[in-house]
Structures are given as structure tokens and as C-alpha cells.
Length: 363
Image 1 (cartoon, rainbow, N blue to C red):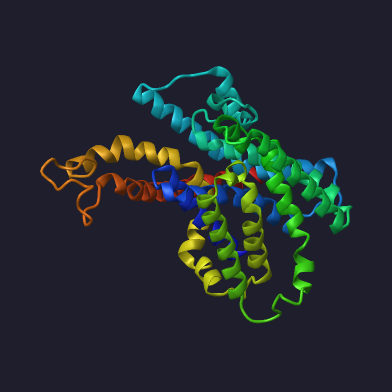
Image 2 (tube, helix red, strand yellow; image 1 turned 90 degrees about the vertical axis):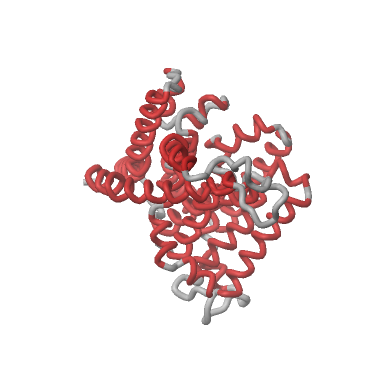
């Protein structure tokens, strides 16, 4: 694992969780984070597991090893979610949606009630599973081509994505459906794969330092990411493509800078490679998937106890929150209670469930 990429995983996972629990200023970073996860998956697989030759046995072996990364965690979360809803009296079973969800096929539906059914964040696993199953075939196909041909294919797929989203426009229903739809999201994955093939060529460029640290490249990547965020906030015309396309360039620069300057990180890379972020990066998968469960734990177990301590509702005798610049609304503190619950839950599930189950199923 490239440590700086693992650190970026942690950063984006935390930002996604904070946005989902109420930090509205992180909306753009959430879109960037999801795009990063798909591109980084294709990028890292292409670097580590090229399929120049493909047969049925090697495909089945690869598919099994990657399916066991997804299904056990998904089924555990699904059982927890159903049990919690049953206890709270909120459970509504829709057989078709439940079967599709359990088989990780629900992101193929264009219905909001299906692809966001039960644990709504499991759509990511459904779409990622499709990318994993396609990877050996894609890798074998692309490996037979020259880099120029791969770039043409990536550009063609990107153009198709741009046109489809332009037609969709700002219609939230269809934008959200395409946001989770596997044939759309695999374009991010393929772009990551093609990007991995450019690493050797990029290393040969005279502007890429042969020695020293990657500080300049890291700052350029951060600057590009910041420019896209500020551009989106300033120009509404970016909306149709803000879910994925506008993040391709900054994410590509992030990934290239991480792999080219691996073990020669600048101060940003050293921060990303620090032990706390590596620990968070190792459980970032669980942090993302279990955020809904963490919110349930907070809402129904922790919030009542915190309310007795004065959190959750301002006292009628206090200064109104909107009149005092020095007071902090207890509502704004909710994300900072849910996040530690999510991290603790992710660590426990990773150590006590994900790792041992994965080792057992891969034997």
C-alpha cells in the first residue's frame, strides 16, 4: 500500500461522514472523495494486479478474493440495520429491494427506494463489486493496447459521461440515480486504470524531479482541488458534472504525485503517511459503510443521555444562538459526537469481524 494514498482515503472518508451528519461545507469534498475511491481502486489494481493473461481460474480466484472483502461486511451491516429498525418499529420489508440489496445488485436500479434501501451507503459496495468483477477482463483487454489507444478509450468514455450528465442537467432525481449507477461509475474506475499506465511516462518528464521530495507536486494537487471547489461554489454551470467529472484532474494529480514520490513525500505526504492517518486509512472502508449505524447509535442511545447534560436543545434562559458570536449551538456539535462512534465501531468491526472472516474465506 502506498501510504500517502491510504492517508487520502482516511481524509476523504472522514469528510464524507462529516458531510452526511451535517457539515454542509464539505459537500464538494464528498463528491471528490467518492470519485477518488473509484479512481484509486482502478489505479492501484492496475499497478499491482495486471492481467496480461486471463483464464477462468484466475478470474474466479480474483473475483472470490475481492467479493469476500465486500459481502461479509455488507451482510453484517444489513442484519444490524434490519434488527435496529425492527426494534424501533420502523422496519418495512420490501422483498424485491431486500433481495437486490443482499445480493449487492441494488445500485443497478434507477429507483431511489431501491438503491438507497436499508443501509443507504451500501450502494457503494454494489457498484464497486461490478468494477471488481470487470477488472480482469478490462485489464486483459487494455494490456494488449498501446498507451495512446488506452488514452483514446478513456477520453471517449469521459466524453460519453459528459454528454449524458449534460442531458440530465440539474435534475436531482436522475443525477442521483446516475451517481450510483455501475455503468457510469466504472468510467471513474477505468480512468484510474489508464492513469496507472501513464506512471512510467510521467516519470520521464523533465519537469518531474528525479530527486528531492514531492512537496511541489503535493501543493499543485491541493491547489487544483481547491480551484475546483471554489469554481463550483462560484459558477453554477458546473453542477451537472460536479458529482464526478470535474474531480478527475485533481484526483489524477493526487494519485500520480503519491505514487511517483512514494517514500520521498513532502510535508503533505508525510502528514498523510503519519500513523494516525494510516490507522484511519486501514479502517476507512468500515468508516464509510458503518456511518449510518453510527448515526443510529447516537440518535437512539447517546442523544437521550446527552440531552440530560444540556446537549441537543438550547436552554430558554440562554442567550439566543444567533445573537451571540461567542456561543456554539449544540446542534453544530452533533457531527463531532457521531464521528468518534463511527471510528470506534469501524475499528471493532475491522479487527473482530472483517479481518478474521476474510482470512477464513480466503483459505
